[in-house]
Image 1 (cartoon, helix red, strand yellow):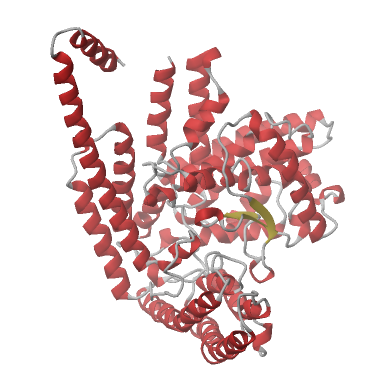
Image 2: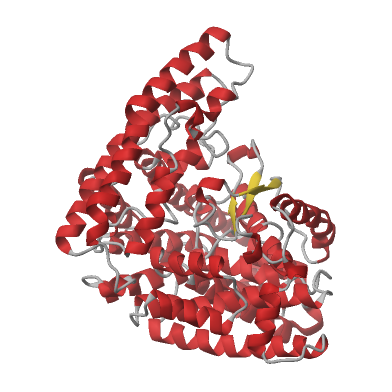
Length: 602
């Protein structure tokens, strides 16, 4: 602030002195030219990395709606591909290190620091053998290709070129599956294998794509739904081509992968340990995952203790609701009531889906109370596909492609209705749709002046922290007047706090699957199906579950700071704009940005 005032004073004095204005203009011109030159150099680095990375990872291009990549599917699990990826990361780390950070504007420094840290994290990740455990029940590449091939995901099927593109990609599926098998064989030899329970779930998912009649395959759906742009002759040609590829290449590849997992890999999987902390160099591997997912340096033990503190705090708030509704019994009895009472169980999948869809109108009408920044993209609520619903989370979000050519999707899991209580509705909707992921991710992708690596990048603690923070806005939006829906918000926050305890328990403290389940049952209202899927999710994705609560705590802390320092000057709409308008940021940069904004307001 002082520096800015001094600069303005000097300019004011010079403006009244003879030819000082000319000197000032010359100086400004030099600064402007230098700034443009530096901006061009930075953009060249960012654009170069983004383009070269899409060449190596064309599925990313498909998910963001970038044309020209939809026929490519390289063997990303191969040693050659991993070597190219590491070389790319090192090349661009060297390029960004050639830039003097002190010569950058504050806005340029944000992108510089994010880009540099992303490259450092990526290079550090190559020290750990994640490629040797490429299959799990949560992010299963076999599921990913099935979803793409269904015609209901990011892969387009609008014309003959689109159908030809997917045919080319299908040819590559067996190559990747065979590489996955080769990698897992190496993992068996070196003692780096998955927990058995994860592989059993994965086998079931993969077997679901083994069909006797190709017309029953999820990959056949685009053939049953030809667009009008294809002639009868083209349609017949694609029917023949797809039938040949599926019968002779894709379905046999799925069977080969499932057979390997069941017959050869399963006997070597782990039954007594469940985290990466128990694998070779596992403690360092898990600490790396913590840093990547939280964007801060924090020890596993500190996360574990923080989780326990939050669990205790939220339990106290739940007891207040028990008093409010005059519930007779202890907290565990209350959990049992909230979990099992029939009034909280949807009568059907369709009823659950319609209830969530009906909530949208109420939310959309009220968010302008707290926001003055909105996404252009539309979104829809869609049920999770049956073949993956048993291992999928309660909800997830898939952003719209570039140009918003189709809506974003809030995937709602309608499997096992007793484990999806009605009181969970509002918090889950606010997290996955508006004003949670849909606002944050879509606004980020629609920002015009953001480098592409940030436009489509993810900072997990920020992204998931914002989603959990969005759940807390239900009070201000008038959506938690029902004490049961308010309990649902607390239960959702409690769940994320439990994740801090159980994720570190699994991967750092050597907890068993049963220890994790027991902790969940003792501390939260949760049905067995959800507890099991969440526990196994933590096993499959070390550190990812920590991002939610760590990020939410930071955003909430920054809001309290702004409210306290600004007093009557605090504007919630402006605060939310400040948090959202630059896209996802590492938590330390978000804090720096909010502190600067507070100083400017004062």
